[in-house]
Amino acid sequence: MRSDRRSRLPIAGFHRRLACVCALVFSLVGCAEKPPADDPDAVADYEQTNDPLEPTNRVFYAVNNGVDTVILRPLALTYGAVVPRPVRTGVRNVLTNLGSPIQLANDLMEAKPKRAGDTAMRFLLNTTVGLLGVFDVATSMGYPDHDADFGMTLASWGVPEGPFLFLPVLGPSDPRDAIGFGVDRVIDPFMWIGNGNIPAIHDLKWAWFSLNAISARERLEDPIQQIKKTALDPYATFRSLYRQHRAAQIETMKADSSGTVPAYSKKTSD
Amino acid sequence: MIRRRTILSLLGSMALMPIAVRQSKASPEKATAFLKVVGDRLIGVINSGGNAQVRRSALTQILNETVDVDGIAKFCLGRFWRTASAEQQKAYTALFHEVLVTNISTKLGEYKGVSYTIGRARADGDTDVVSTVVERPNNPPTNVDWVIAEVGASPRIVDVLAEGTSLRLTQRQDYASYLQHNNNNVDALIGAMKTQLAQAG
Image 1 (cartoon, rainbow over the protein chains, first blue to last red):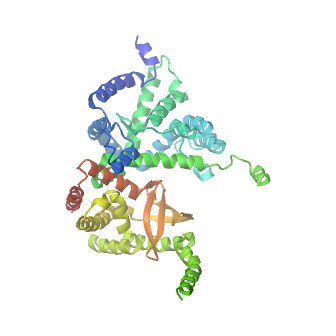
Image 2: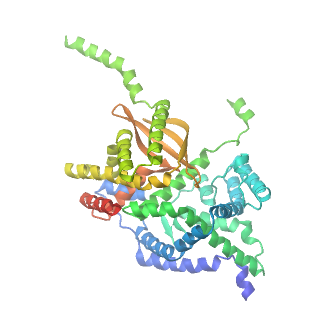
Image 3: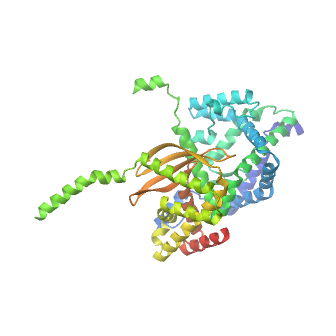
């Protein structure tokens, strides 16, 4: 029985329970009230904000804040204080390198061959010359990093972002990015390696997830504190920043057509 | 006579048109030169060893001379600017200046040793967008775009885009949400800004 449980994806059981809790809270809290039609400015604001589940989202925001204050932030601060900066950079590089297969798959699905080539070269160089990804040697060799995930892939296929969502644990999102997150986990080859009877690998994956969260939180400490200090409504500020940041990532991806058409072909077509 | 005057004024306005168009039309080269001056002045303040009060007053002067703070303040209040009374607009704009200076000056210490490189500049409607890469010691480089427009015949920064996120749009949505949850009452916003300033010390 024990090996059965371990043979599942490591986050599957947790997510199932999470989904039940989400469904419960969504049914209890409900939706934001749409302003009356005779106030066109307010209606325009409501539509632009596109956050019909705001009351529910704010509940999850408060829950996440609580979890962050009690668990994640103390861990991240300890990590930042105890682990020297070069080691933290190395950890971040290893984690980024481990994400290369997902990145490559999405580069290809976004029809960005140049980006896919960059990702493949980065993985090859950083895994070998960069000593299993500890050092990012590829950037200085002309293969810079870029963002690619299934949420962005869906955007490149024309899927709209949908209403804003604040998800437990995962934080700011939208249906497109939430689906993207799930698909990225499933297409990650590392997720499937040793998905049998090897408890050590199962534990290693949990360590990987945890370290990823702690490392990311440690890097975001300054901006998060700054927003909480200066924003009158931090929830609305995080919502705005998340949306704008995602839009900018997608825009950069779409605009990056370098190398997708050979130079000689461009000249003849001009 | 009237007709002649009309024709003359028409001709005169036509002759002036290219100049007027040229004045309002964006000029990426001019914007880049302007930004270089602003950037160097800011870095001078950041790396100066003066006390906090001196640096704050130097920063205030730079912001007033190079940033369209009044325009940004108006933008950030969005649709509520129209419904606010003249007194509310005045009080809000004054507080906005203070909040902006306070928010930036509390961050100045973290930017010690900062450097920047100016990248390409492009015209975007009536504005110019100058791209820069800002590097801080022990931090990954950040892409910062500066949106510059002609305000009263001189160039002014009207927005800053940090990694694609517009600072004035983010601020506007923060205020809009605050107002929405406080009965659209501009006085409540003014009160909150006052509290924020008092807390910042």
